[in-house]
Image (cartoon, rainbow, N blue to C red):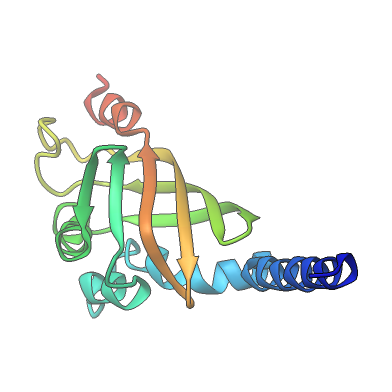
Length: 164
């Protein structure tokens, strides 16, 4: 094969790679549109099926991970998120900041609420909490896919709930 043909093939492959990379790059607006239904699942309302919102916002292969080796499969995570409304009937989760890198979306969020029952070992007191969260999502075909890694300051929330 001549040098010219090899060079042309290299250019075509490189151009195709750039196009694929550009196609995978989300804008912040696109990212917010994809993640909005997922975060809406945390905002409790009497007529809302939070578990269904999670399932609608996620791909079949989605997992919710609190550590590298601690992941819940989609159905289990949806059930857990759906149950938050019973324990915290005024739960609210706000998106404070969104950063995008390719098909990865990093969200800084803020959760707040007042548990209606004993919560994570803290007796019910009527006190409220506010916490920060950081989530790293992967987006494929307009849905959260693969592993979402998340951190929430639940220790800080529990300190607020148990403060004298």
